[in-house]
Length: 214
Image (cartoon, rainbow, N blue to C red; front, top):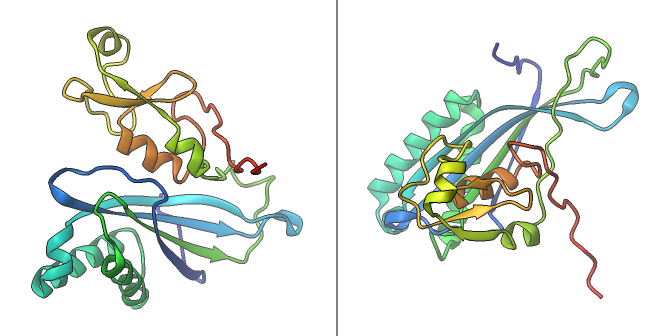
């Protein structure tokens, strides 16, 4: 059932991913995440539930050099924003923030993340509402430190595919292993951990606070 956003305050934040992930064919990933925030019961911390997410890939050099390609990308992004429930009158500011980052980007390997949320000031009644997930990203150092392993026949028999994208590992030379020993495509698990610090399969928690430097 779609989440009602009537009467909600919309806000957005656009930033570069803290982790570099090599993409094919010199493409830049723009990832969109939409959430609903509601005031916690009894004045507690806001409760967050995801509404939707989507990835758009654009040609890195083309979007920086070609005004016509840039315009077509803007239209494609706007269509994706609409499908995620972002009001048309809010889309220009989101697009402006995205292209400001595109202009200063130096590599297609550093994705652009677009976090958008609707804030509902009506308190959540925890006795009547179903449980709502609270998403906390993993630390940058823990994501960067994930182990890269080479795919072999034994691993494929044990784990034939990535549960995030449901695509096989057969044609992948290197994939990422979590500390809990579950395997994923590198770009899939990095994208996941940028939003949620728990393993998709077993909910193993990755660090959420950077260790203090000595």
